Image (cartoon, rainbow, N blue to C red):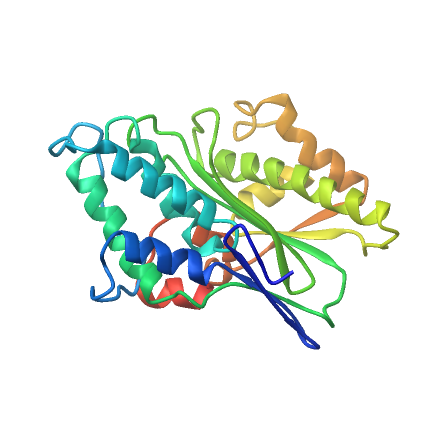
Length: 273
């Protein structure tokens, strides 16, 4: 396979590269942005988009079609996961500021058309995961935004940006909820590898940058930090006791899932990519 539904596959002895270069170029061509300047980051830090501010678009279908294409682009571009999630919240009544942010996003894509996912042929088959929330990030509901990414060796296999179902009362609670989501993904990937007769070294490290959440996972005693958590969130502790995973601390500067939860400075964004 070399090209399938906008997905390009390049393989050699060192591994496989997946990207959507032609798909991005088609988006740029359709928007008549071939001569536009490139942007160093997908979304400005501190940008506050609202469902009520700005003039309504005369042709909202153009915005909806663009967001739909960007959602499909997320297949090989985890670096745009946060921005696509954020912009897709406004497809019901898109306004001019939303379209301007989306077009800035396309300028970023123009400068990064060759970025993709590389899967080396000599990668080890151990699993590791990163999880990170942005507490109370949603301006409309105060719900936290969660992001995770799961690697097999040095190969990125799974990632997601997702708004949490309920409001968290603390950063520790938000962190613990995304640890629960990530644990479910780890269990699925480990079981899939077992079906393929691949032995995964256990426990799987789950990297987070919140000490309180790590302590909650290890400490079976309920206290004021845990009384608001749903019972299903203690799924993390069960899997820890089974020896499937081990929460580990990672410094915020090296938290890869940070890319999934917020707009970052150009230098920071490039480093995490």
